[in-house]
Length: 455
Image (cartoon, helix red, strand yellow):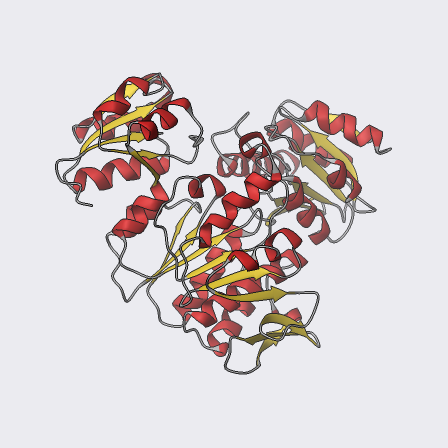
């Protein structure tokens, strides 16, 4: 499709929406930009669009505009069942996501990675391995760099490593990665998808256009992900940290082993992987497998696994104050992610949790405390729900606060030398923050301020 002279409605003016507007303007399209937020709420991001000559329609849904446009591009925050989206589709207007638009503009092969947890680490690690192997790899997508903002820069000799969310996959049509991976699927975003069946179906769309020449990578240890193998028309490889496989990536005698059809290849010892935790072993297995498929050598993979230090906001060590270590896991936006963070802690831990309610149950989350979590500090929309679940489970060392700053001080008061303080909310951030990154930065600033007060 040529975009020159076409009228395109871009709905949602967060990071990816603004990148879509810029890309389309550069291609000669007439762009109408819409957001339910007002000009005052959007603030500085709007002035940039005005300078580009973009028509703005703010503070309302764009129902009145859908019959005036040739194409609609929606942000991940816009559900596919929104009335104005359904109206556009009835009128024959194509509705796509930023992910789909980026795919159409990108000539590089794509490695696409989704899953409930671990996406950012797996995407970043895969990109680092490919860079080590000499490829020009672009790490983009839901990780914070919109795919569409880099799509036109890439040529067919580059590789796009793309973090993909279920929200983005709702509005694809032709999206077709060379390698598609589903790291895991556990309950999340049920306030949007309504049922687990819908959520799983959305995730599975990542490989719906793959052909026998492509690859699908699935977690053999995760029932929901592994169960999708029969739906894939591509070559399927599994990874597992729990059992040996005939092909794929697995652990054998404490060593990471790969076989993509060239015979078994030993990569490195599990204990040599720099980033801690069982979940990061899974990320390492998946990333190694994807990078090997794309041409990285076992040596490239081993060197990167031994040196990669992880990503910001994911079990990120912040500082030690009075013998208490502080960890930022703001990217723990659902119970399963936070369970993994708790299991990665060595020593007694005071947990800070709570945020926007996505409809998740916290039963398994509280059960995972074991002998690790000594106290829980809660805040945000889910505070009452967390307190109620904890007390039902017999855990009554729970304290409510009204801010991250207050939470950091309270958690420190409950800790002793040798303890950890872990921010791992098990919830989204949008009740109090713009995103999990802002929440993590506020936490780190609060720790820095506390250190200034104490020392």
